[in-house]
Length: 69
Image (cartoon, rainbow, N blue to C red; front, side):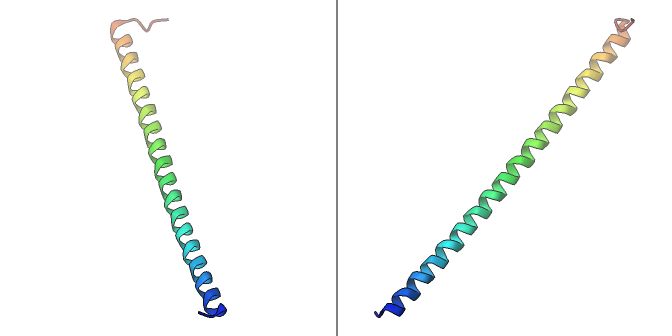
């Protein structure tokens, strides 16, 4: 094998490594985005549950007359 073939093979190996790294980075970005989205969904669900619980507590206070100031 002459030196130009060797250089070409090294270049192609470098190209393949770069493409693999880019794919890995893209997968990591996708996973990170999915995790962030799930976190936001859970926070929204938690806030809705808290609001619902507060509403229920207020309804009980109103029904029992405990909400008078």
